[in-house]
Image (cartoon, rainbow, N blue to C red; front, top):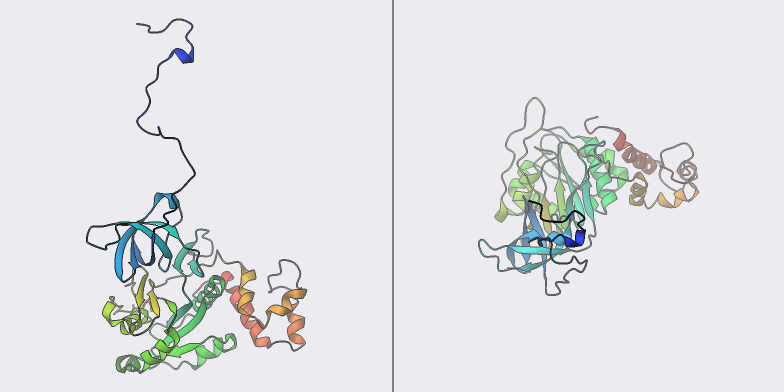
Length: 336
């Protein structure tokens, strides 16, 4: 049966208000002025473990943050249940501006950028001198990511009892990168830990390295109260170890105000996100020579002013070679 006349108007039709979306939308977000400050220690499937004052709190990201995600090392503001008791959950409502960012992509053709660690002071690039063999191209890529993200690099060379460090150190000597050389015996008796700690004291240090180099073993020795499962096997065919660290984790150094952040072992380190023009900032002795460069100069082309500037004796030619070697890492694979 027809309920309305032949010439009905929209105003004549009765509508029932829906249960959802009845409140007017607003762009005003709560300020959460009473939010507590915290440090993100680790992230696992949408749950973030944060340090608030002197205790650990489990939290989740507030919807109002949208797609912005918090990562290990982020300084955040939290509201809700901050007791840290079992089955309680706080809410992260703000993420503070980052002072540094370690980023990577799966490979150089992948546009998806992943933030690994935030607010670290330095990047400890751990590599074994043997078993598995060093991969200089991967080290170069980590150096570029450190310079691009605002982190100071530190080379940590392990297993010096299996091979001498001289050849590898010579390759990076012109970069003036600080380094520490360790052996298995020195790790066991603690002498190597003393040298490593000197480089970490008072800083937040992210540790990276491909599997099997002893990265997590070193972190376990530095922070014995928070031991993580280590790699006990290196594949005899590929020369690579198995991943044992599956998520980044920030750990406080005992008797120090420093922090170490252990990250999952690397298979590759893509640099799709890196703007090559920013790498020059890591070479302050060369940067003045770029004033005569053409616009958008890559510093690795024929018209680059650095060639003449270095030839005039303003800087060491070896430094220019090192710069261009790092700039070329995006064109080479890590295993080359």
